[in-house]
Length: 386
Image 1 (spheres, rainbow, N blue to C red):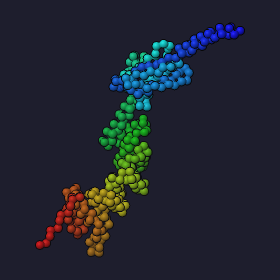
Image 2 (tube, rainbow, N blue to C red):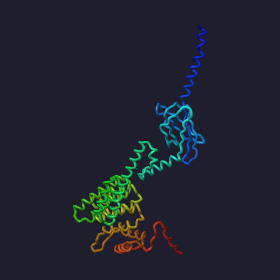
Image 3 (cartoon, rainbow, N blue to C red):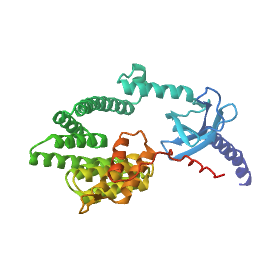
Image 4 (cartoon, rainbow, N blue to C red):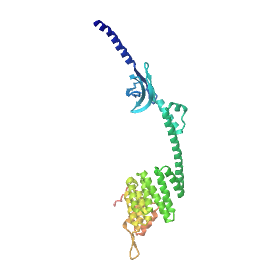
């Protein structure tokens, strides 16, 4: 009995050794070389190996010469991806490993980039080569063909949109307001998200309102212009210019409270343009016969921009309306009126309103200053008495 037991031990040991050998032989390896976009070996690229038939993930890195290897992989099907600086740069899918010789997967990022550039060009031109189509999976090819069709449709739409916009601009410049309205309306229907289309449509309606005699038609055009400015502002809420133009439209519609709010919004967005915005407000109020609010607006223009010459002149003109007649027929003007005209002459001694400013000073019995100092310049020194 003991002898029989000992004769079986060598057989068991041999079976164990044969089983171990078979298990060892079931592993495989993937190796290759990674080259960068400069065509040179790329070190420290991460090689991610994802098993597809059974869950399993493995990683390794490329060495100094760009070479990498991962041994001990179970036989199977894998997706191999190269990652550089945290971004997946290229992938080889459905890689089947085998016994014996390693499976070689090389990555050439220079060549891959060239292929991507060529594919992008193909998408833009709508011309995919047979070789490009052959190298793509059915899913990728279908996605590319859809992208090309979508791009061609978008280009065709953009051409029609641009043509309508450009035709509308030409009509607006020529003061052909009905044609401009028709073209900008067409453009807005094609792409309602273009704020510049809405702002130009607003200008066309406001321009039409200015030349329309019938009150009802004029009010309708103004309403459309205001509505179009509101849409432009909705799409571009930080554009101070839109608020300024919107305010001017509101003024024409005699919506003065809303107009002031729009001007203040423009000023809050662009404080540097406050002088111009308040000046525009003053001009509109003057044209609508609102003298006191106009004077206030011109004063704000001066306060925010003391070197705004025309604001000083218009402020002086505005104050002239506050003159009061004496019993002897002479007129008394606010003293700030002469200061405003003299300031204008100091800032713009040869300006377009220089002669008018001098005439106004003379009319109120004041004296025109004959020495003007440019803004920011030092005043001439007073001569010392000997």
